[in-house]
Amino acid sequence: MLLVGYGDIARRLQDQLGDGYGCVGLRRLSVADAVIDMRAGDIGEPETASRLLAEGFDVVVVTLTPDEISQEGYEKAYVRTASSLSRALTETEHRPRLVLWISSTSVYNQQDAEWVDETSSTNPSGFAGKALLQAEQLLAATEVDTVVVRCSGIYGPGRQRLIQQVRDGKGCAKQPVLFTNRIHADDVAGVLVHLVERHKQGETLQDCYLASDCEPVPLWDVKQWLAQQMGLPEDHLAGDYPAGRRGSKRCSNKRLLDSGYQFKYPTFREGYVDVLSRCDNKK
Image 1 (cartoon, rainbow, N blue to C red):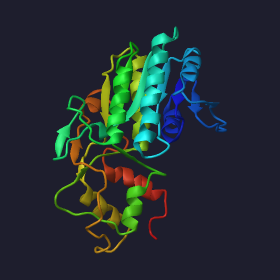
Image 2: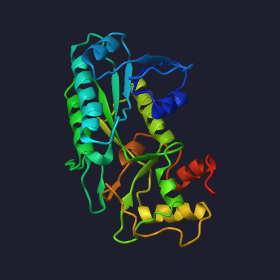
Image 3: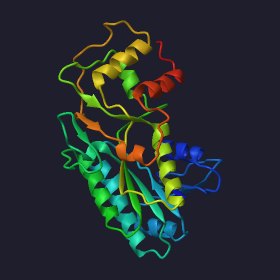
Image 4: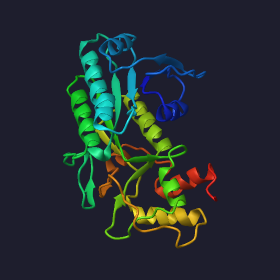
């Protein structure tokens, strides 16, 4: 199994894999890792992509992170990589049985608390969603079994931006309601392992799965709950902190649940209890 963009999610995936999987990690910069065969390289370069696929990996999992939050950063990370990979997949004699590509729910542009699923329209207005959707389309044009996993907001140890906002007193308005969708990093990895195992057992996968936990929830509720868990005063959170790039939609994970996946952290409550238990939140 080739883990492209080897980082936090790939490490968690590797930890959750059962016996019988040999993993190779790929990053642009070399990283010493005692438990995996690490390679330094950029699969966005066609020669690198072709050379790696020639090794005959059965499964390729791509979990990328842009170098910068900009149009150029996203196009380089996703569109360039998808273009190079799709070309290599078309030309190689050693095609993998399965490619898993991590995308994002930012490909949706619904703003009025609508429910979205894998069949909902995608018409992103931001550069991130546009780049991610273009990458998905490039990979869909190949003849290899490719599954796109659209993740909502990933959180977990080391991904504590919302906790820091609450600690800093940055609340949000209760009205209008701004829905947020989240998934713990362990569940992102768990979804990938689940799909790999199903494919290995000969089951047919859908071409896309929406990976989000079981409870879309108003952001105001999440921040208030976190403040209570952290023992902060009732008036700690201000109500005028800007929401940034967020829309307001509700992500359905029905397809994923129907496939048999069981969430380790089905809502933000279980997930953030885990995160809070691992960090100092009382200061």
